[in-house]
Amino acid sequence: MNKKILGFIFFLLITLISSAQNKPNILWITIEDSSPQFFGCYGNINARTPVIDKLADAGVQFTNAFSTGTVCSPSRCTIITGVRTYKMGTGNHRSNYSIPSFIQGFPCYLKQEGYYVSNNVKTDYNVANESDFINKAWSESSNTAGWWKRKNGQPFFAVFNFEDSHQSRTMTNPYEWYLKNVWEKLPVDERINADEFDMPPIYRDSPEMRKHFARVYNSISLTDNRIGELLERLEQDNLRDSTIIFFFADHGEGEPRGKTNGIDYGYRVPFVIWFPEMYKHLSPWGTNGVVTDELVSFEDLAPTLIHLSGGEVPDYLKGRVLLGKSRTKPADHLILSADRSDNGIDLVRSITDGKFMYSRNFMPFIPQQRYIRYMEISEIVNQMRADRKAGLLDPLQKSVFETRPAEYLFDIENDLWETRNLVDDPAFKEVVVKMRKQLDEKIMEARDILFLPEYEIAMISKTGTPYEFRLDTTKYPLKAIYAAASLSGKQSNEIARTQIQLLKNENKIVRYWAAIGLRSQPASVLKSFQQEIVAALNDTYPPVAITLSAIAYQEFNTKKAEELLKDFCNDSNMENSLLAINFMMYFDKKLPFVDTIKKVHKMPDATYKVKAACMDFLGSLSLVPNNFENRT
Image 1: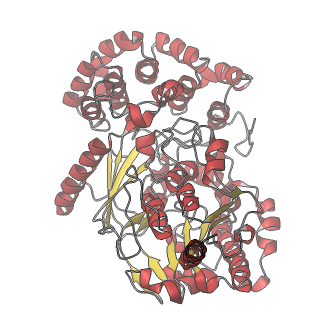
Image 2: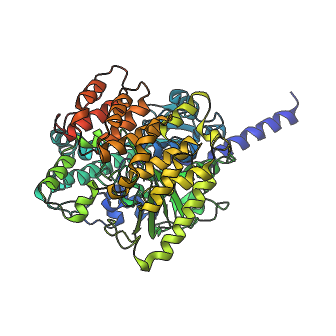
Image 3: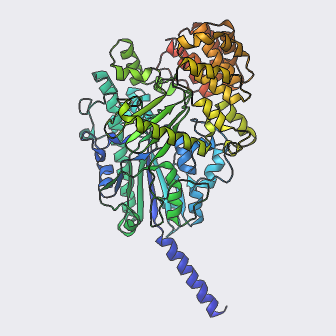
């Protein structure tokens, strides 16, 4: 072979090897269900998190980092795809809906740039055909995956997920399980006793509650130890000086009022980036303990990592590039979302500028502590419900079990635990008007597909994708739909009259939101429209008929509504059944439905969500023990 050709090939190989070696290794450390206020580096003097604190002391600590959702699978869906769940229809926890083939798990783009990409081990990506999606995204995804399986000299992107702070550890699993698997795993001098921390004011400060809440501190302490072990292995493999380390939680704290709720306590996460000396130039904030209040969200992770690897960011990714000279201009506000979690329906859209958190509750008749079986089996929720029944909770602590206002505005800089809703305070009127307008604009701009009931999302997913469906303005007239949805939670005779008129609209989704809005009207208002509501029970669209039946039964004791609800509970369509049971759980008069619910629970083809809702219904009547877990 010609010497010049050989020389060129040799030069090319050296260039490619050099290029690969110059790419930073990237280690992602993710933990579960944790809010910043329980970590030492975020100012909690009672926390025992020395490893994470040291990482922050030598890196960059973010005070305004937010998950795009408030429960694991929707949050992880945005993390892995870089696309918002309200665009893809994947905001409802543990769903299985189709996404476009061009939306990939972002690690596949790193693979194209020569990276070995590994995931250890959690996925929970909330998309259809998840196993195929995982195989395309990762070089390996398993409980043995790690950087140690790459080729010699190959750059790596390695994810490690630690579950020790998960809600199962901090509240759901029995206390005896916690003692064996968390408390006894900690050295004696690292254990945090029930009297060694400040109790958040949103919970009753009692010995019983302190006993349960200490689990949060100890679970995080154990997590910190696990992270220390991983970083020690990185050091032993002589990779610390070439690896950028990201640390963050998948969403906010798992305790009641946090996880699943569309407020700061559900969205805000601890977030730290550590840079080795050779890559400190990539940090626009500096390093060595710098604290930044720059707004970041999980939508930013995929484009940042693709850019960091040397790849080209796909057009469908709309998040920011955070690192390097070509980073995107900082944002002045973020849009966040919360939807169904397990068997508990909801729809919240939020906006934050880092100082204020404004949230729009589109189903305010659902309380913050809605019935979700996975939470209802926990001792702390049972304790809170018992304390409420005994009259031991103050108005703030009790509010978690009550209907919500249509809007929240919290000063999250000065009111850490979101104790005072400022939405009606004249001093904050301009803030509310500004944020309300920004939220409306962003919802329309994104063409938020989750304003469709889940019944409809499931139907669309059978033959197409919600992501693409939302772009068709004829099939999805969001302007009209959102106008109807925007009335939900607002209470007056005039608004109710408009909602009654909208029940005659030719668009079934507009009618659905008219019905949802009426569900939030007080009894005194609904009484004036009894005839119209009962007449509309014949609506051919199931989500409308179910919602109106719930109103007619609760407010007017209509026999036809009762029978319709029983029929929908038995519906072969699980979304219809789940919606009906969710409404029924909050009825004053539940006994007529007990036999129906027992029958539905025994149905062999009932999904976990429906079975869980049945158990919550029966549990609310004390017909089953609240600590009985159903996992069939």
